[in-house]
Image (cartoon, rainbow, N blue to C red; front, top):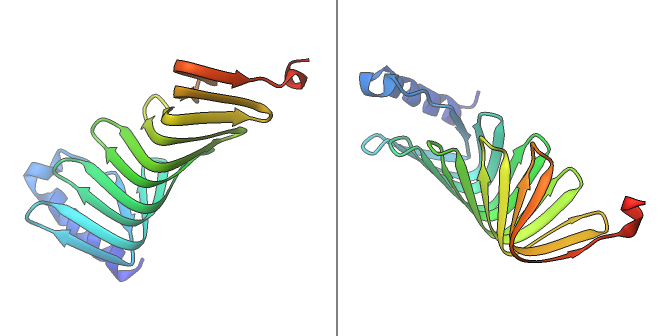
Amino acid sequence: MNKKKFFIVLILFFIMLNPYYAKEKLDIEIDAESIEFNGTDQSIMASGNVNIAYKDIKIGSKKAYYSHLTKQLILNGNISLVRDKLKLKCNGLFADIKENKITATEDIKFDYEDIKGQSENASYFVDKNIVELSGNASASRGEDHLTGKIIEIQINEKKVITKGRTSIIISPERYQ
């Protein structure tokens, strides 16, 4: 374990010894080239090849800020989120750990099995395993292509639902 990672784990261990924090379980692991811990507001600022693990979600970015008090995570720059077969790329990301919701902004690229999508914004509802693309949203599967105001991809149910005006191009070969 590198020194910075060990140092952060050690600090978080001592925070957890404090009775105020003992009732909360910290599920986040952060690894980076540079990490700054602020004991006053219980926050972590990480930069340079940041890697974050939360449950079965892995996130990489250039910079990250995590507040232990609010359970919120903010990432900037070249972000890559992976959970099983789901991949999401963007340039801005906000995660509310208490709500289990991740909001992505700026140049969203979505990939799940054979479904590819893009949009200006995306919300990922972690517990429900649902991705919602919005703002010039489009998704494709092979030769089939879909555009809409909002495209909701229900991963567990293997459904795609659109909201608002929608356009779809369906390849007849797939359904013969």
